[in-house]
Image (cartoon, rainbow, N blue to C red):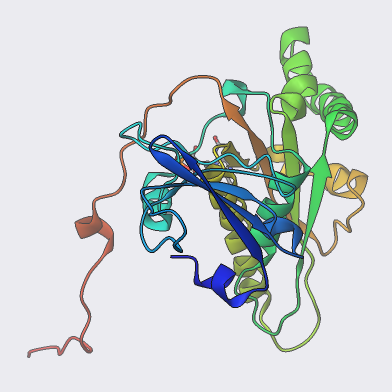
Length: 268
Ligand SMILES: Cc1cc2nc3c(=O)[nH]c(=O)nc-3n(C[C@H](O)[C@H](O)[C@H](O)COP(=O)(O)O)c2cc1C
C-alpha cells in the first residue's frame, strides 16, 4: 500500500491500539515524518491493506476529507474528483489551511501540465492584511464607478476579499515563444483546479471566482501585475465550510459526451 515508503530509508515503529495500529514513520523528508494511524493491518507487517485514517507529525496537522459513511476521513482520489464542490466564501469559517497544508496545496497547484515548462502563472497568498488592502481598493473603485451604489454595497465590496480565512490570487503571465497563449492560460486553469482539489483532499473547501475585480486594470496593477499582458485567472477562497452544503445539479453526460469515429458523410 505504501510502496513509496518501502523504497525509502526510514525507521518505522508499530504501536498497537484497540482496533487500530499506529505506524510511526521517520524519514529525512519532512512530509514523510508523519504518524499514520492505519486500520486493520497486522502488527509488525507492512500494511498491505487498510486505510490511513489520520496523519500527524512534522508535516502536519494534516486533515483529510471526511468520508460519506462516517468511517474515517480518507477519501480516495476518484471520490474526491467525483465529490468536490464549491462552497461560497460567505459560508467559510476558520481554520484555513496552515503552512503545511498550504504548501501541499501550492505543490499540487504547480504540478500541472505546462507545455514548454514555462510556468506561465503566479500565485499570491493574501492573508488578513492583503485581503484588507485589496478590499479597500475594490470598494474605492466600486464607489467611484457606480454612482448609484449605497453604503451597504460599498462596505460589502470592502469586506469581500476577507470573507474566507485565506485568499489566493492566480495570475496568468504570458511567456514569449512558440507556445500559444491559450495553452498557457489553460495550464493556469488546471492549476486553479488542482488547488481546489488539494484543499478539498485535506478537508478544506474552496471557491474560484473572478468578478469585475479580476478584469479591472487597477486591481491587476495593485497586485503588481501588468494590465497590458497579465490576466487574473481567479480569486480562490479557502477555508472550512460552516455547514454541510447541498450539491448543485451536474450536466448529464449524454448532453456533453458523444462518440466520434470519423467525419459524417453527406448522403446526396
Ligand atoms: C474561471 C472561473 C471564474 C468563475 N467566476 C465566478 C464568479 O465570479 N462568481 C461565481 O459565483 N462563480 C464563479 N465561478 C463558478 C464557481 O467557481 C463554481 O464553479 C460554481 O459556484 C459552481 O460550483 P461547483 O464548483 O461546485 O460546480 C467561476 C468559475 C470559473 C472556472
